[in-house]
Length: 132
Image (tube, rainbow, N blue to C red; front, side, top):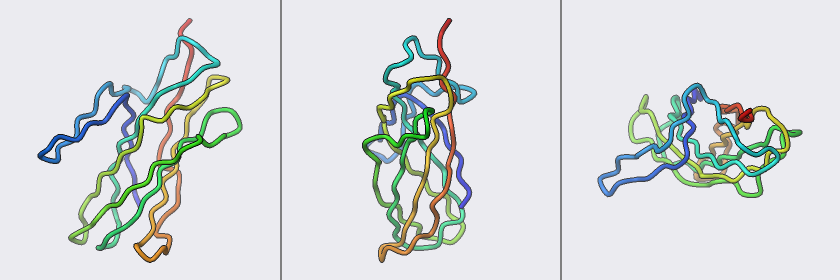
């Protein structure tokens, strides 16, 4: 799988299927006013090279300190109708408790409807810094 991730504050889906990314973080950097404290972030991803069919996905966020996984992961389904088609998935906003500056990492797991793992890999990261 090839994955491109965009980090933002919120993702909304319109009735026509279009998705709105609100508060996109340029350069994949969040500058927080309070560390330690909670960070809210959503992830929107384009996934390539998935086989045709219906798949389940799970997106997990990991905090900078010791890669602690957030309490909740985000689950959903994707259907690839044609070979070579790009799929989009999204998760969040997740609330991640950050004790120190560093990277929030995102992991993406995709399985077939029968539970066979297609991919389970690092999808992207965003740096969390502190406002001076």
